[in-house]
Amino acid sequence: PYDVLVVGGGPAGGAAAIYAARKGIRTGMVVDTFGGQVMDTLGIENVIGTPYIEGPQLMRQVEEHVNQYNVDVMKNQQATDIQKNEFVEVSLASGATLKAKSLIISTGARWRNINVPGEKEFKNKGIAYCPHCDGPLFAGKDIAVIGGGNSGIEAAIDLAGMGKHVYVLEFLPELKADKVLQDKLYSLPNVTVITNAATKSIEGTDSVESLVYEDVVTKEEHRLDVKGVFILIGLMPNTEWLPEMIDTTDRGEIIIDNHGMTNVPGIFAAGDCTNSAYKQIIISMGSGATAALGAFDYLIRQ
Ligand code: FAD
Image (cartoon, rainbow, N blue to C red; front, side, top):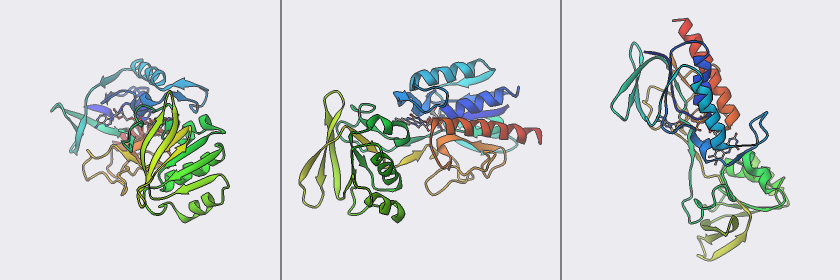
């Protein structure tokens, strides 16, 4: 068996594998697509110490870094189930089973898409999902935020400090965010909230120039001239495949302690698939390191 088996090859999984291998213990890594969400990111400006890097380049470097150690990397493999007997056993879609003394789950998350024309075409060309990451790109510009829940309203408050005007589009008749956030939002002079708004398309030539929405009550269509559209309608953890023995929040995020351990001894988790407060590259890398050190501590006590 492996001493540590890491499932997932994003920033969290990469960091976990490097930290585990550096302890000289037998480390394996099961990865569907090496790189994770970062492969979809064009410019990254908040990896501390690296003022600018493109996502695929960063993850190539992480992969090279992993490969400098004795890590058994199994790519294009999907984990489908976990069992705990004497060892932790991970089933793969290929039919194989891997055994390990400890496991680190780092299968990340995915942003929900709105699935309207223009969303795919203008990804990284005006369409964004993360205000901490891409907010500064839209300084002084008009911006739309789709989604009136907590993440949408937090984004709108954040973006209102940088952008010229921020339009918040909510499909329902009212915002769903906490009242304290709504109060803050409504106190800002450069924000307009539009409820009953169903986004129909995002349009432009080289980059986003406007957004078309329908008022679901009057059925009238309206156009907003905006340079940026932030889509914040939910981040979904990739945890559907986990067995019930691993505790998650009602949103499916794996619950971990401050050593990265789940409720099941020997099973750890890191990154966007967990209940971490914020979902970012350096935070995922840090939690991957924590989970690997936590696993090592666990192993030396067995
Ligand atoms: P992920 O990156 O999601 O990686 C998950 C890994 O698990 C992948 O390798 C995947 O293939 C694998 N996997 C999933 N399920 C399975 C399975 N069943 N079996 C095997 N493998 C599996 N953050 C920043 O800090 N700065 C930015 O500028 C920034 N920009 C972003 C832009 C976009 C468009 C997006 C989508 C995100 C951005 N983020 C940014 C957020 C950042 O990408 C995430 O916080 C980070 O990638 C999370 O890392 P992770 O390792 O937890 O998960």
